[in-house]
Length: 303
Image 1 (tube, helix red, strand yellow):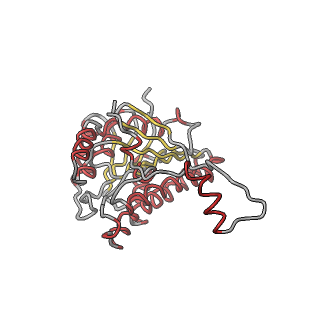
Image 2 (tube, rainbow, N blue to C red):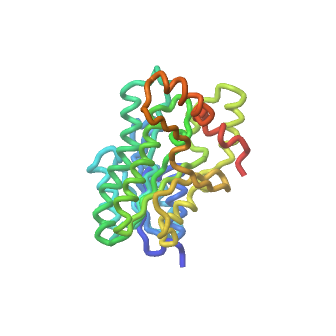
Image 3 (cartoon, helix red, strand yellow):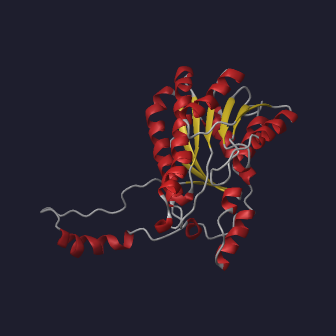
């Protein structure tokens, strides 16, 4: 039997790229899929029903079940319609994949309030809106899987992505809270940081030979490599897996740690600004985090 036989999965941003590959694989694994995508540009502008319709058509042509939804995840009513379409057309909802995203990359001093709001609204508020809509159904049936997409831009860091990084790290906090609050009800929540070439990544212009080489490496990491982990997390085989952060990089899968204390220093009489400078700083300095990007942490070619 296929891993997702009889299951119903909603996937946001499923008209193109990673979301589309997830939808195609989940359908091949037996799931009925709600393909959500309003068809906006990489910066969140415009609309086009074509991408969602094409993914649905491809699933149906292969013998699978799918339904297109073009609502925006930034609208709570639209986000709720994604879940309601799953229940209306397929009778239930078993997994939510929060994949929708846009980019508005700007170096910090040039980032506008609108750039900030737009990215936070799609990534973080969108994940909240869809997850919130699915929760009553998950609670009633005593099961369900939330699969949220984070990024190493938030987990590690990147240039020119304060909005995106903040949203993606916020999603980790959202996922953790859902996992803790919902564990007693049989509901789990996990995050995936994908390494994959997509139209969003293609909008980041390489400015140095090192960046050009990075882009060429990224092009070898195809979106279909992300989908198997999503299908696993949506299935009953992952019943024991919750509150985790994974990353997928071509044929590599990583499990990320979470922030935990790395050093401590006690002073019985308490601290002053001066003793922090004289005593604590030298003790802590060698354990300070460096100014690193994901390319510093993953310097080897994807395998």
